[in-house]
Image (cartoon, rainbow, N blue to C red; front, side, top):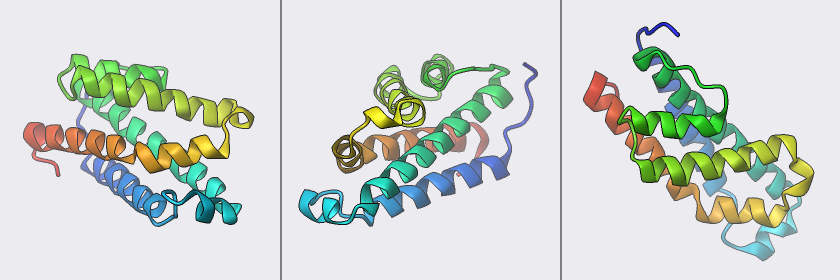
Length: 149
């Protein structure tokens, strides 16, 4: 893969997309099971938002790897370890976020019938902070490396 320039437009779009989607998830009653499950649209909205936010975060990581380091990755689960090897994120972040949540994303897409609405609610209630921390870690690296916020 040929190295290039990280696109400020791509970075800004992906960061904004993740922030917007996470805010939409937070606007849903994920902390209150009774209220959450009272409206059957809530699990559907959470699943869609979660998948889209994860894909945008992974796409951001893939863009950094391709453009700044000339590294191509085929699977989402490879993005975290590759970013950690390049010093963009820590090994802990790579393990916690990319391996675990890449697995969730793949199950949501390929084995959607096996993920319960309760599991979707749990992820949205308990693991959004991990995604926010990952976004901040990538953003801090971009700012330090390229003066991109």
